[in-house]
Length: 281
Ligand SMILES: [Zn+2]
Ligand SMILES: [Zn+2]
Image (cartoon, rainbow, N blue to C red; front, side):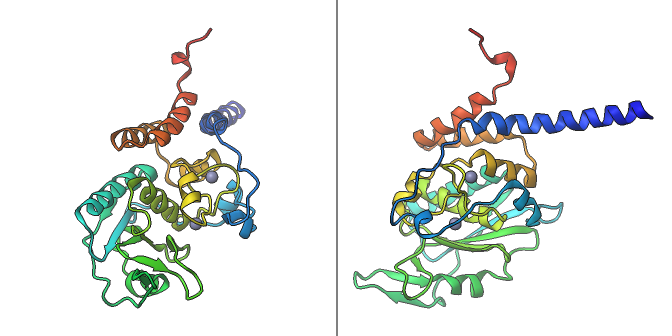
């Protein structure tokens, strides 16, 4: 009996070590955040970050046999190049979360309240999109629903614009292609917002997709890579093959000329290389 318990404990420890091995290996590639400068997200929002334990204790939504699909819902009219970016975003989100992702047919934005800026730019009221178009509309097998608007968004009258808005509790969110217009930015914002729906808070540990952003400069500085702490949370929730995920992300970046992101992901892939392939000098 005692032997059995010992063996069981040993096996459990071995499994744990194996998991933590990947995260501790790639943690060497985490790049610490610099002291926030005026105008940056962390300068204006004093966030503490969310530990792995805090994440687990927040009881995030987890996929089940009947509820595991991520839905993307385009809102408004999209040009052909924008439609291509939407298709690529679907592909990327599916790889990023290792969960089936479906791009729904576009719906009209005609019922959404809007305002027109002096330059003629029409902006939709983002909280209305959440409340009226999205909450309660997630298909039965959906774990999250992210709308992507063709028009620009604003959250309230005293804000100029917003890239995205998501509800942690209802697991719906809205983003816009208007200010992004580029695959790299849209996949960054979409995975960030869906991350929120999976209860990931803003990351303050390292450069990471889950860093808060006050504008394009910060979004462009955020890598399309989760830091080791955020990857550990996602893995705990969704349980996938880390190496397969990395390889698929790298292939996506290569096919879409996202060289900077490819190079960053490759560092993780090389750190996690099985020991027999490491050439010793
Ligand atoms: Zn955010
Ligand atoms: Zn992170």
